[in-house]
Image (cartoon, rainbow, N blue to C red; front, side, top):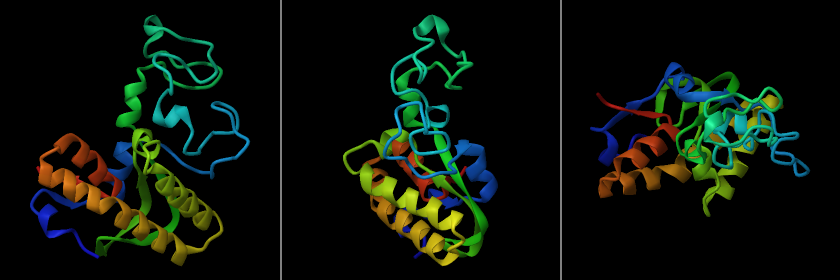
Length: 188
């Protein structure tokens, strides 16, 4: 797999440093079936500390709410009080215990992989993506690095058609966000 021809003039391969610069935190655990919105979610796809609050200007535990508390960080749950819209642009990443080949460039290696913002994960098509990210985390934790590479490639295969469509339609903010999800960065 390589960067689709439609995207080659607009993007180049992202590095591990690029990915970490976009991230608001590392995912370290798979989702728990019994987790609530603020219990047992630390380091998972449901972590509001990383992706932002699920309710406008309210922390996960409910201790603080309202725009007068904006930008405060709850001392109990650790969530920054912000609008729910922050969930559309806050990335996470998954640290990989070894380097893996970039799915779009065999000459580039990555030691982490980007995780798209929560709004994409919570979309109607997001369940498949959540499952892939959980598989990536689990494979990494168990030292199954071939499976890590295969899962990273599956995530890129899943997201790339959407990036191409958004590019062709000229929907650049969403295109740029999803492109980061396949470890591409905009050419300056």
